[in-house]
Length: 109
Image (cartoon, rainbow, N blue to C red; front, side, top):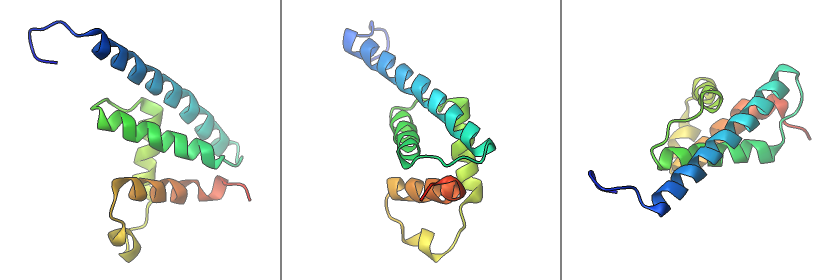
């Protein structure tokens, strides 16, 4: 979309979809943080969904919802820095590894 032009219906639909992704990611992040506080396992599907939502929002230049940003910041702080991390080549692989590291105590068998 260029400056000075009205947003198209497609642009508005994209904004609405990204807003919905943000809203749902906030709800799921709240559930994940609650599970952590209560020492309950966090399902792998929840971890993957939060990762995908964060990547999608970042890809489209959207700010992460506060709770999702908190989780992602915690992942960065807790990830060990070593040779294994240097070998990861894609951003998704790195983010998946960080999520797995952060949620390791909460994952069920």
